[in-house]
Image: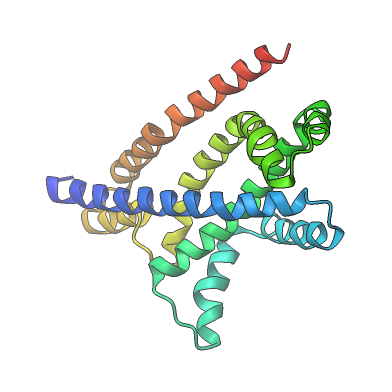
Length: 213
């Protein structure tokens, strides 16, 4: 494999990182909204967001991408591949992150919540100053673990014609007829990105477990 092919793989890597970043950042904001609604105490909001989470956790990510990219086009809403994939991954991320953070919010010791109420703190202040900072710390290992899965999941974008790392590898392989070499390199690139994140998440989990003993 020559320099030109390797640079093409790196170009695909750039799109993989960009897609992961957009999906994670946008999913963070929407997922926080989902988590807050899931713990709001309003039955209608809780049921609606529970259904939203169940929908995205109970269906394959590839199917979700197909629905956004091809399904919307059937109703006259033709989206660019990048926009459609970004929306699909954002919705997917918001459901998973929302459930992770819902669990983290509910894992905050009950005494902390009751103490905040005893101080007459409003809902916004109670969440911003007391509950969410603790929930963020609790959720970090699982959040980083999901980020790793999200990065690897971007390979499914190739099925709707988006050229990220995996599709770039497939295109290079078809040109030079060395699939083991090309996808071996692609696998190493994924490993270099994901393995440090996995180690960091495991370390945070150990630190949190030690702190709660």
